[in-house]
Structures are given as C-alpha cells and as structure tokens.
Image 1 (cartoon, rainbow, N blue to C red):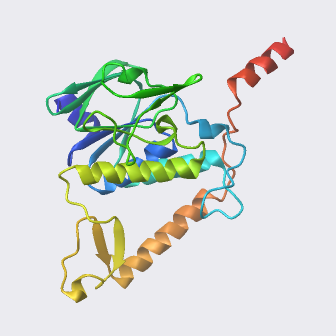
Image 2: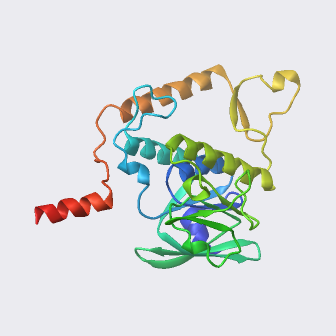
Image 3: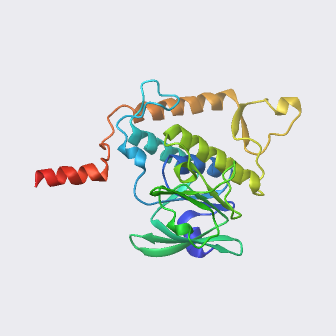
Length: 261
C-alpha cells in the first residue's frame, strides 16, 4: 500500500475497492466497513436510481421515499461505518502480487489505488476489466460480468454485484445482492467474522460464550441512546423536501432541448 493510498483513505484492515456508488456498492460498503475492511468506494457519474420519480418498493417505507434521499442515506450509512469515497472513473484494474491496482481518472489528474479485493458494482461500464481474465456476457447493448452463485468472478479476489452481475433492475434486489456478495468476500478473507449483529447485553456472555467477531453486546442505556440518535437523525432527514429533482433520461433531455430551439 502506498503512502498516497494511506493518506487518502486510512487503513485498518484489508482493503476492498468498491467500484460504483449506487445501491449495490453502498450496501456492500456498509458490510465490509463494519467487518473492519479498509473500504473505498470509487464512483463516477450518478446512480440510475436518481432518475426515479418516487421509490415505492423498498422495505421500511410504507408510503415510499424520495430515491435521491434514499441514496444519500445509504452513503451516509456507509460513511458512518467507516467507508471513504473517491470521485473518479476507474479505467483499468490489474492484478499485482498482493491484490489489485486500479487506475483512476479524477478531476485533478490520475492516480493509482491498491486493494486486496475488488467488488464491481458499476453499471453499465465493464471496460476497466478488459485486462483481466473475467467472463463477460453480452445481451444486446448490455454487458454483464459472469459470477457464481455467491458473486465470485473467475478471478480470485474480484467480485461483482447488482445490475453488472445481471440482477433485476430493482433497488431492493441490488441492495440485497450487494450485501450478500460483501458477506461472501468477508467469508473468503482471513478477517474473523461471525455475524453483523448488535445483541442485547448478556445474549452470549450469560450463556458462557465469548461475543463472536462482528457481534456487539450493548446494555439498556446504550440501546436507548442509539434509538434516540436514530430517531433524531431520521426526524432531521425527513423534515424538508430533498433539493434535487429526478434526473431525466438523456434522450428526453435532448428531445426537449431540440423542441425549445
């Protein structure tokens, strides 16, 4: 790991570079960061979910939720758990002795980022994988990364989740698949991990068991504190309209522009 890498992201465990900051990438980042990975999300452009008018098919929102706010909340959640974010376009991913090296184009030039693992969640760019022996499937104008049932590609340490892995075009499916593949990555690593779970005090220890890695026991005072904090965060989040309008499909933008000329 270079000094530049450490200055950009810090380091507290094996690094995973997640390519793509949409629903699948952000949900994966929550899980890898909580498991102790040095998690870097590299994002270029915007998630297609920002085109959505109103998101109405995700758990926990009976009347739906603003899709741009939903993405903002996922990013905040990943950041609170330790993930960091880089704006830039990944142009190449190459294997090196201890993992991967990513070449990234950013506003201030180009830089390299090294990681132990890579999780591809971008849509619909796969060009950066051209130098790797990874299976790709073309369906019309779309190209998908071939994976096994758990998100592994044919390259050790390289995973894919969400639309790029040919999952259905639904936010909740992408979120779930991002989490599932992240857990596969964690399980394949040397990081000790049992279950991502906050348990009430005594759940394990009063049965004479050590608290497993990834699990946390909290007492009643701490449980109430966290509940108050979650209520405060959500109240503040939903007290005003989100400032951004849906992003229109580029073809409609062009058609409207031409009609106004």
